[in-house]
Length: 477
Image (cartoon, rainbow, N blue to C red; front, side, top):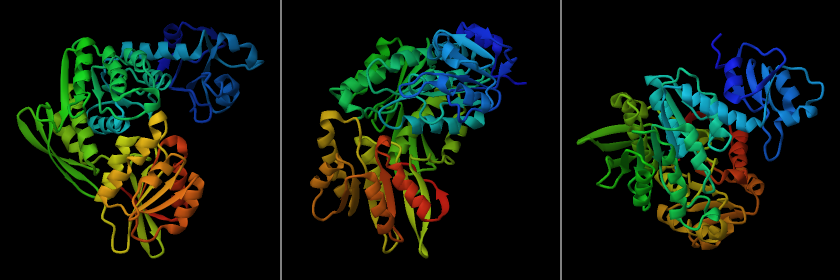
């Protein structure tokens, strides 16, 4: 059996004590009793809302090979009979296991953070490196205090490339995570107005993102967006953290990985990249200048991790967008079709502007409209009114004539839009969803974007449930 971990290695890494007859090993690690697979270890993490110990029995019923539980929770497990590893604290044990996974691995490790584009960049890296070796990468956006150690603990010993997304919404969150990951290459995609409610300025956000450099291994690399106003701050932070090699990407002429020219299309795009004195034409399987900028970071990270550059460039042409991050759906309405662009996963001012630009570049057929369906951007704090109202400018510049809004903060955008823009406003996502189902017409290109916490994905799902889908195409926002 090809074990992810033997039980003896689990015990040693986590400083646990065995209870019952432990299996020889486990094939995976899970913290979700509902989706656990046969032969996996279930880590009973206590979260803010639920305690995994309450679901230990369900995990066993669904195939868990052993349980990892806290010493203090043993009485609460009652008469549950199962192989167990008992530890002081389950999350701390998972962190220790993640660090052990990193210690035993010879993989080239890449870590990605940034206000915008980190998940897209991580997925692009997964895509371009997969033909070149065994890749292990974060699932979805597992980028926080439990997602990062879980991703580490799941990394097989025989991994060639490890790709980790590291996020934050407060200072001092990235620091312990990057020290677990210990990347060879650390990427900061961008600095933008995300989580503004927790920071006084973009410089403060940049300083928090720069914590990622503190974990870079000796002789490692930092990759920074040279188009960012905070570039100098980030460059100084990388040097202060002892990073040996600092690289840049972007349209700035001084960029080491330079965006020389960009040609956008409705479904894909072309980037001309200046690298090492050469200008290379790169086809990208998704539209949007912001995607091309992220692709430059991907090219840089892959090259610095030792990947074959020609194979990396070829793979960018076949990349596909992710659900909630620009996945396109062609939906049948009557005898014709509309295009739905699903950007419902998350939003901040920078990604909103990128999505609006993408909708601008879409070409509806005769009778169709460009429709922006927008929900609130969360965690904007005292800046919420201003950043929502400021979206009026890019909407007008893009020539988008139909804007449908939901949420209390989007009322500020409603009030800021000029009379020539047709605005529909509803207080709740569900009310706007009901409106949208009856208001879309054949030929429309409809883009849905909001912060995940608003539930805007329900509008996407309602459209998918109501109108049959013909194909799923490309086009990530």
